[in-house]
Length: 222
Image (cartoon, rainbow, N blue to C red; front, side):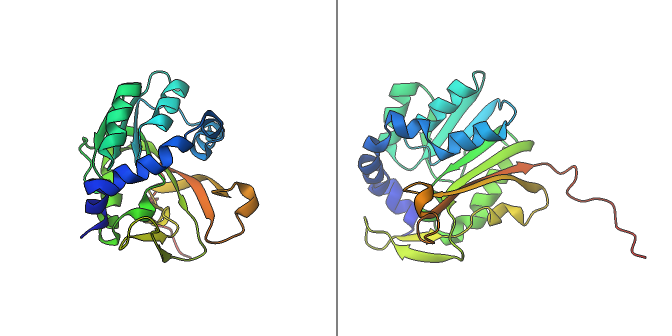
């Protein structure tokens, strides 16, 4: 059974139940993703998508920061989606990153909200394709996830048979010269104090998508 099916069938709801209480006001203020976006001074996005949005708490804060934006979210937890719709009135729906129900080039900002480490490995190419398809040519891609020195996996402690895959997920996009890394910050679940521990290290990376400078005319070798 694929990991995405396990999360859609109930583990997504279990994850949300375990973590929902952690969304305190203090954590919202110190959110790595929000701070990274503010520090990077990104232009105001009209359409925003968060993949792995839970109940949309971060999307609601983004909407406050970008007043004219229209926010969308997708998450495998139907409980989180239902609660988020009731609380915030955002455009949220249950689903997974490998099949995004949106038009081509629709979003100015796409955010992966700490979810790629639980995705099925065979879906990674499709996930990258779907995000690239939906992001417009001058858009921004924000990735929050683990950042170990090399790729490996751990057993997922909450459900037997699920693995937690840790790697630099910006590499899913940076091989393509259309994407340029414009920001990266490294921390951990416990803050900066534990970022030297490989298994705890997480990062927020911001990539800019633009094909203007991706393929210059052929270099004249002398």
